[in-house]
Image (cartoon, rainbow, N blue to C red):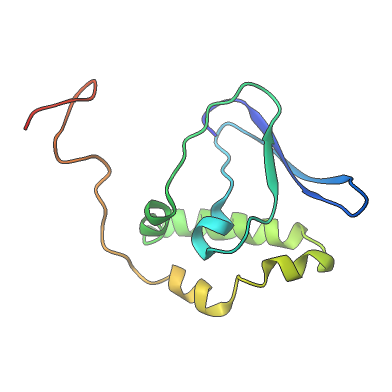
Length: 126
């Protein structure tokens, strides 16, 4: 999230909703599903006007070779998984050891911008 605020939660039996966390600028979400390919573990809803940056799963995976990013993502992922109750664990069955090992496998570097990007407001020269 670049700006604004949001809340994450999971539906409960009977139509209720259990809040898990609130987020603001600098926070991120969706990393568990993006990195493992498993279903989302929570729903995130903006509770104020917000600006978010969408990072494609492949790009997130590519950044996992940077130790600082890997530590940040894994510590957040671990914290979020610990907040879930035992009843939620079947929904997380897709997060297996092979998937977690795969996240530690270095990926080829990816370009942040197209080669034709000139830095002049999006115009390119070819």
